[in-house]
Image (cartoon, rainbow, N blue to C red; front, side, top):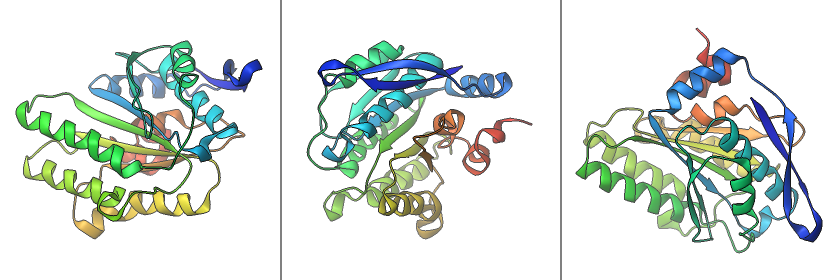
Length: 241
């Protein structure tokens, strides 16, 4: 596969150009096979701190997912914008979506996760055969939610509901991808990844990875880290026997 890179064009719009960065074919095939049994939902931080280079970097990573890994199409949500795009399968579609959204306001990460997880859990209660879901959240900073909507609480409660329903351990996965170098955000996201399971005695359904601006993202880990414990621990190497 090739991942995408983006550059600002005239008028402030963002464009994509291709760059080569392919994981071994067997890892890619394993990732695609795993993803076929999941609905992939991308959640993008569109707060004001994401303007400029970070917005372009987020576009780059999402365009790579859409063009190289989407099998049934992606669903894209934003933290602030009400826009919801479904069945996204190409980098060009991602570019058009990003150019229709302007980063603004704060980082209501918990509020958005609360809405998405609540809707999914309710539907799962009505339909136990519902397709499993994989949330990929791209953000640059710590959330700004009020206490009752802090992401930690918003994740723990659905995890307990899933346990009570005897849902598959892989029924829901949440992968946080940090863009930028905000140290506070790094510590916060790492705490969600490392401590929720032991602190609250819940299932492990959270993973965190970091997107350096100067080299390709580990796309396999990004796509499957929240739903595969070996990938969570070892990155894309976890898919190789």
